[in-house]
Image 1: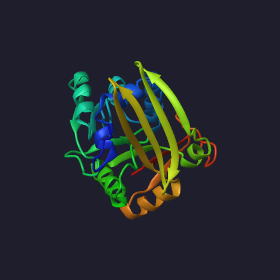
Image 2: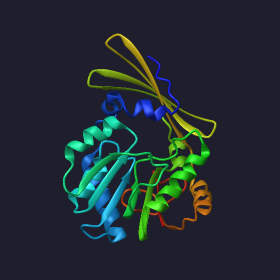
Image 3: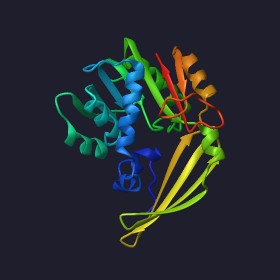
Amino acid sequence: MQKETENWFTSWFDTPYYHILYKDRDYDEALIFMEKLTGFLKLKRGETILDLACGKGRHARSLNELGYDVTGVDLSPASILYAKGYENDTLHFDVHDMCKPYHKKFDAVFNLFTSFGYFENEHDNLRTLTAIKADLKLTGKAVIDFMNVNYVISNLVEKETKTVDKITFHIHRYVKDGYIIKDISFKENNENYFFTEKVKALTKEDFLDYFDKAGIELLFTFGDYNLGAFDKEHSPRLILIFN
């Protein structure tokens, strides 16, 4: 079954198969990263955080456990429906398009785990950054946790087969037209499925160009979840802190 929609992520992220394929993502790793990040930002317990493109709420739940008032938003109704099962007085989830400002301001806005650069329209990347700036309180800070494209491309595993919950996923990765693309095919109940993940190969310099257009100031850059220094060739992540 070929899934064709205007945006690939509106179909793929809202299927159960996306969450099956990535079910082994580490909750403990998320909590450690959130501890380091909030500590570095000197966020106080009770302060407000927007988790932008939160998925099923892995990072939002970690942040809430650390004592923060967290709102998680995502375009996927299925992901938000799942996340709402964890809601409490200081943890809320909402379906929301991250290209648009939310209806309140926060002490911090986090966009984590390469949840940026999905859009076909280049202008939507700039719209998202402008919306993030609008979501911040005057003294607030924002974080984008993106892949380091130089490292990813140089270490790209072209083909991989992965079996999860008795489903065998065939994965093909490649670079085309400035995007890092992952084709995912599998069969279940005698039906063939095909999905594509497509993320723009944005470098630090690309982000700086966006920041300049959006009136954003880059404050700090890190290269891994331990907040180590960023190295263009060897760092696995590109973590940008700005306001």
